[in-house]
Length: 144
Image (cartoon, rainbow, N blue to C red; front, top):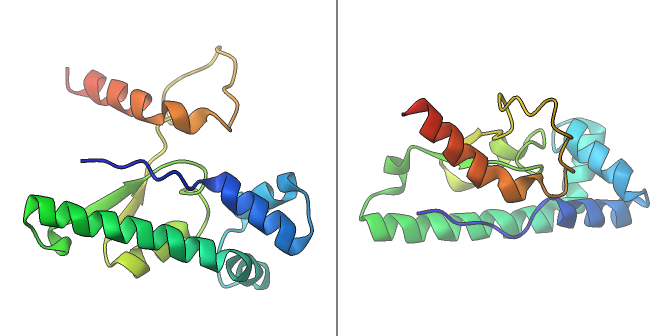
């Protein structure tokens, strides 16, 4: 079972941009370089996005509960949650998600090792749309 969570980095970028009165590009840089951590800036980012983070964690936790019910297992038996996309790469996000769900979280980057060069780079905004296809293709290559 898998679920695509529709709340993505763009929601966080827009919220942070308004909260800190900075451009969306600056927000993207802050989220990807600083993230939510113990630094003064990281704490500001967390304060500005904590309601959105809480909603996201709630949605993920709800899905994990549904999954456990479906599989008739305890949550600890899941092992780990795999996350991908711009938001997943934000420093501190995996730790926050793990702390608030009680499950280990691992970041995966489906673009890693794909050797897309010399193809034109894909715009970051649409990369997550291809993540599943790339991951399945790589899985197929490794297990064929």
